[in-house]
Amino acid sequence: MDLDSLINAVKSGEQQDRVDLEAFVAMVAKGSVSTAEATRWLKAVHQHGCKVDDIVVLTNAMIDSGARLTWPAGPPVVDKHSTGGVGDKMSLMLAPALAAAGCRVPMLAGRGLGHTGGTIDKLESIPGFNCALTPAEMVAAVEAIGCCIAVQNDAVAPADGVLYALRDVTDTIDSVPLITASIVSKKAAEGLDALVLDVKTGSAAFMQTVEDARSLATSMVQTAEGLGIRTLAQITSMSEPIGTHIGNALEVIGSVLVLRGEGSPDTREMVVLQGAALLSMAFEDVNMDEGRRRIESVLTNGEALDVFRRMCIQQGVEETTAALLVRAPEKVLGTAAEQTTVLALEDGFVSGYDAMKMAQLARRHGAGRLALEDEIDPLVGFVIEAPKGSEVKKNQPLFTFYHSNSLDAEDLAELKSMAAVGQNNPVVPHRLVELIDFSETKA
Image 1: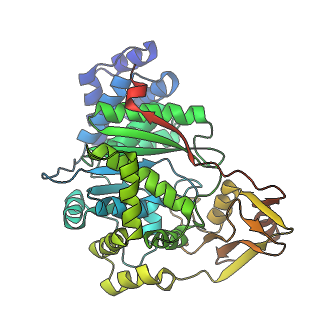
Image 2: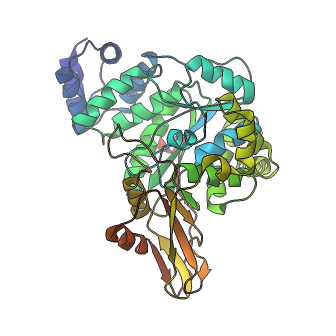
Image 3: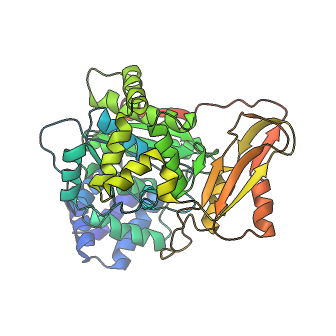
């Protein structure tokens, strides 16, 4: 393996030698590349970028460093990835909805990162829910009930774990090629036929501009398609929180409500949008309209809710607990000791909520981590009583903050600044900003 040759190719904008790049990734996974050597390559890619073909080779090599899920003949295998948002609970509903609609969904997910919540933290607020599945256990669970949601682990793409840790300490996190390889390697290792990417943009997203979101989305679509996975990216707005429930246990409650055919229309629409796209890619005879109809149907008729209940049991939850969870989730998950409700100061229309402020306050009160070793308080979060566009009267509740510790003056001032009420009924735009399809990204 000639590392200097790889780095020189990156710097000159040429394609890296495939054999050398594959050898480099394999050596990284085994720990036989020094930190200094790996850092030189990371910094070169961070500064100069690299070609799409190189990202495909890099991603495939990362997959080869660990286990790949393999599937017997059967229904299509699909999944989605989100770059993270405030109130982004789609996975909890999407996996069982897609399973109910005839797909297999082996979903690998992560814990909270920065101000955004993590799917695994949400599921672990359910007593007994086990996210630590081996690849073999993931396959068994999916073959049994159609879906599973498991935490990312060292068995899958271990080279990514090593490189990610190095990126964190070498200021190379924000590299589109490296982000692409990290995300797509773990999804491709699931043995997927189709993948939807939800790339957030806005004030509470990691990619705050549409241009940055488009750049990442295009790179991920090209790379996943280069690995043989039918892929679509949806760029969606992330300045307002998604739905009415924000916070780990509260998002489980919000998800159960949607799975019961109730709950937030905003949340439901995101599930339908992603689910319809996956069904239209996975089945030859399904277009977006038919995909929407099928996802709407399983959310309304209780089939997706029943798959969610069975997924909970499959992953360690007692049958009686799972049954109660889908009937009265708050009785299983509990409620925070304190609730602080913010009221409207005047008659008018709710013109918006500041998702970033909400996420940051919840994180400071334990809903997210400030350090890796921090314990999550699953009960901390928000419930929005008057969503954006609602007409309200003075002293009508806007939202409630659920917390375990007392609030200081700064917290209270922050709470009061999170919602805005005006005299004009605001336009509530659809969350979908743009689609990135492979046919549009090919050179």
